[in-house]
Image 1: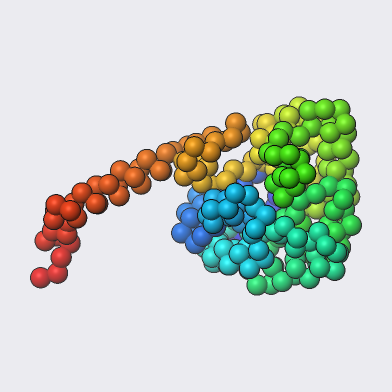
Image 2: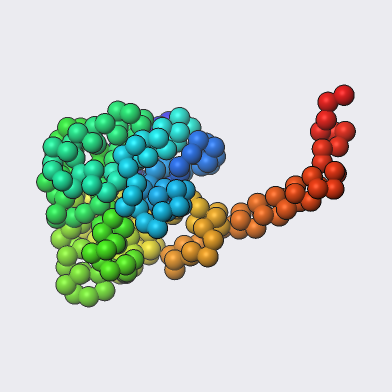
Length: 266
C-alpha cells in the first residue's frame, strides 16, 4: 500500500468506496491505526479535550498541534495525515491563515490542514489552496463556535439552518477544499449534501450516506469516561481493561508477587 493522497480520496468517492478516518495524537496509537489500514489520520484540536483535559478545543495552540502531529506523522507510512488549524490561527486575516497553515505543514509533517467554517471561510480556504496546501473543510456543528451555537447542538434541523449548510457545502467546494467534514447534522441532509458535492464528505453524527466516517479514537476505544454522544460507537472498553491491569499490578507489588524470579536478574 502506498501513501494515500487527496487524489486517492477523490477516486474513492467516484468509485463508491467508503473512506475511513480516525483521530490520533501520539506515535504508538498512530502506528497501530496506520498499520490497520485507516485512510486518514486527523490530528484534531480535540486533543484539547481528550488528551490535555480542557473543557473544549478553544485553548489549543498552534504549538500543541504541531507537537502532536509530529509524533503522528512519524508513524504514518500509508494514511494521509491532516492537522487541525486551532482557534484563532486562521480567523483574524487571510495572511495569518496562510502563514499559519504553511508553518503547520512545514513543521508538523502533515499533508493537509483542516479548518472550520463555510461561506465565512470561503476566501480563506481559497487563499490557502492557492498556495498549494490542501484544505479539508468542516461544517455543521463546528466545535470552535461552541459559544455562538449555545453548546454542542445538532445543526440543520430547521429550514434556515438546512439552507445555510447547503450553501456552506457548495462554498467550501468552490473554494477548493478537497473534502468536507459534516458534523452532527440529520442523515437526510448529509445525504443531500453528499450527492450535490463532487468532493468527498466525511461524516461524524451525519448518517451512513456520507462518503466516509470519522470518530475520535478515544471514544472508539472506550477511553472517554462517561462522555458518549449519540453518534459514537464504543468498540471496546479499554478503560475497563486498563483499570483491571493496573489494579492487578498494584496488588502484586503490595504483596511482593511482582517482580518474581522471571522478571528479575540473577
